[in-house]
Length: 422
Image (cartoon, rainbow, N blue to C red):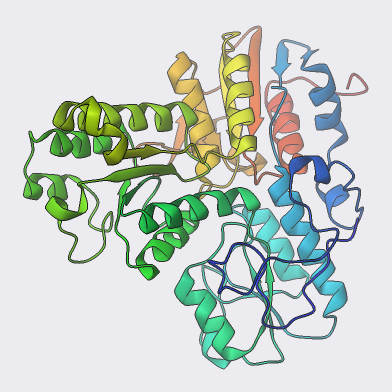
C-alpha cells in the first residue's frame, strides 16, 4: 500500500491546526485502523517483525521448561505508528536525494529513531539534533512531522521557510486538537489529562494558546484533586497554582475568570481508567459548586484516549488478572503509553517492570524505569527460582523484534532454551 506524500509543498495534512492548508487528499491515505490491515511493506514492517512474537501472539501462552510465557491479545505497534513509518518510507522514495529531516523523534523508541538516522534522516530537535540546522532550512529541505504532531509555532516556522512537509500526525492525535478547538470556541478552558512536556500535550496546548484560549494540565488524580477542590471552592487560587506543575497553565493564567467553565480531554496515551476518574471528579466538583441546573453549561467531557491505547490496556489487564509472577513491559523510557501499561500491573498487585529492551536484562539484575520518579534503577535477584510465569507486553512504539529479543533473553537467563519448541 502506498500512502503518498502531498504534491503541494505547503500543504500540511491533518486538521486545520496544521496551518489551515486543508486535509491531505491522497486517495490511499489511511483514516482508520481497518485501512492499516493490508499494510505488508517488507522494507519497513518486516524489519521489525519477530517470528517468536507472532507465535506467542497467536497462542497467548507457552511453556518453556520452568517458565510459562504469557502474552496479551493486543500489544506493540499501533496502526498510527505503522502509518507514520509507511509515510516516511514513501517520502524517502518520492524525495530521493533531497535533505530529509525529522522535526523530533518519529516515535518514542530509540531503536526506531536510530534506524531513521541510518536511513540518512537527520533530526532538528531532541537528543540527536544537528546544532543550528533549523535556522538553515529552505525550500530544498523535506521535514517530517512526528506522529505526536507539533506545536503551532513550529508548523508556522516550517511554512515560512517554504520546506516540503510530510505530516505523519496520527489521526487519533488530531481528535483532542479538534475537541480543544471546540472548547475554545465555546468559551471553555481546556483541562488536559496529560504530561507537561510530552510532545502531544505541547502541541494541543499550543493550539489552545494560538486560538486565545486557556488550558490546565493535570498529570494524575493528585493534581486533579487539587483542581477539583478549587472548583468546589475549598482551595484558593494561590493554593491551586502552587499545587500544579509550573507549566501546567499559560503565563498570566487567572483561575477566577478562567475556570468558570471547563472541558476535559486526554493525552491519547494516558491510563484510560484514570482519565475517566479525573473527568468524573471534576464533574462532581462543578456539580457541588453550581448545581445540576448549571452543570451542562459549566462542564464538558470528551474521551480522546486512543483506541489502540485502550485495547492494549484492556489486554494487559486481562493478562495480569491471571496473577503472573512478573510482568515485563517493554518500551522506550520516554513512552507515555508504555509507562501507563506498567501501571496496569501495579493496580493488579503484580510486580511490573518497565524495561527498554534486552540489554536491560542480566542474570544478576534488571534495569528498569521507576514510574514515580523516572529514575533508571536496577533490581537484583529479579527472577525467582523454580516454576514461574512471566507476562509480557509492549508499548505502541515498540517493535516486535525488540519484544522477541526480551523474551529470548528472559528464557536464557532462566537457564532454559527455546530450541525448536517455539
